[in-house]
Image 1 (cartoon, rainbow, N blue to C red):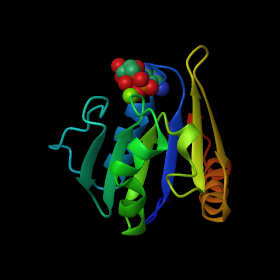
Image 2 (cartoon, helix red, strand yellow):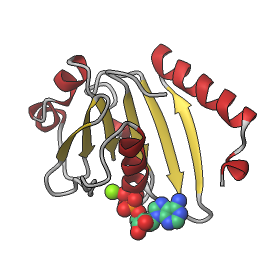
Image 3 (cartoon, rainbow, N blue to C red):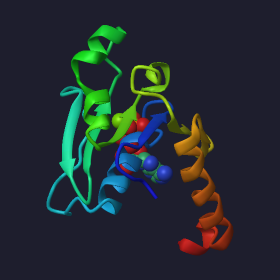
Length: 140
Ligand SMILES: Nc1ncnc2c1ncn2[C@@H]1O[C@H](COP(=O)(O)OP(=O)(O)O)[C@@H](O)[C@H]1O
Ligand SMILES: [Mg+2]
């Protein structure tokens, strides 16, 4: 359901599955199995190419909007990259706004998905329709 320039912000405590979900999204966007998708915690940003260019970022160590701008994520997004951003909830404006916001909780494991703009609302709507047609339990 993701398209060029979409922003997915993944939030939730350590171990709640942000990287796990980012990896799953990379796979479904066609990043080949041979290519490992690991946590970008120390490198801050990893780049992949699937059916679209992808940037997977972890902003845990970012301390200011200025520092974030140096990563060029908003520019990559403008160029058509899908952004998957861990710990990005406080930087949505700097990332260009209109985020699909996925909040993960650990105990119990839960996810809450919301949209902050027109484009992300389209994704959310498609997601609700898909889940209504085939609930997660039925997908295994
Ligand atoms: N939905 C899930 N159910 C069970 N285990 C999960 C789930 N999501 C992630 N994990 C496991 O939890 C661990 C931490 O997940 P990770 O994605 O690195 O968390 P985060 O990036 O939020 O810190 C990994 O070993 C991963 O396999
Ligand atoms: Mg992580």
